[in-house]
Amino acid sequence: MSELLFADSYTREDLRTYVNRARALDADGAIRLQSHGMALAAYVGVLPGRGLMTEGAVIGLRVIALGEPVDLDVTVSLASVSERLARKGISAFSIPPSTVSVGWAALTPPRSGWEKVGELSVADLKTVAMQGIAEIALGSPEGSGAHAVAALRERVWARDTQTTPPIPSGAAFAAYALGFMVPERAQVYAHGHWTRLSTETGHVLIR
Image 1 (cartoon, rainbow, N blue to C red):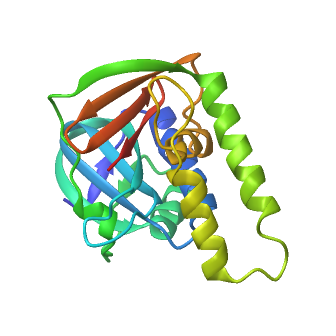
Image 2 (cartoon, rainbow, N blue to C red; image 1 turned 180 degrees about the horizontal axis):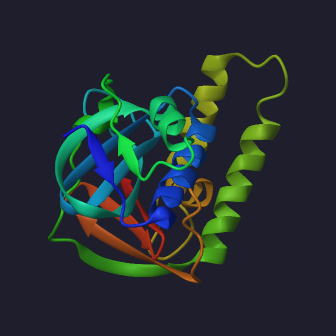
């Protein structure tokens, strides 16, 4: 399979917007495109996690409707996808030939068996995200070393929220940065080592 056909122009634009948001977080990032039918699961890494098991990884997921069934599972650069989606007047999307390898993409979140554990206010999640962004900006003055900034980001986003149920603050950041905070409530699900924050516009998966 070398091309994807979207359900309509709106779904193509939806994916383009999502990819651009992910690139704003990591210009050199990757996207995993997975489909076994009429829906395309587009995964992006927001926070990489730690160690061999990438513990603490935060992954965004947007599901895109396709115009024809596809069997696909590739991980490619966000830049290559963005470049192809920027082409005007093209209904099909050519899959980039060069794949990339990133730790979070080796994780496959469960498709079923999730248990709902609560729901959260989107307003509260946005507050968590904005406070974290401000804390990192304040603690990273000009001239701060890259390692120090990375360590600060890890501490801030690994911290559990004061909500019920609590979730890692990085999940709120991912939902905010990827544009998933459209409805008023977000659902929280659990499955083994995984937690999922879901709204009508997308999902955040935390390992």
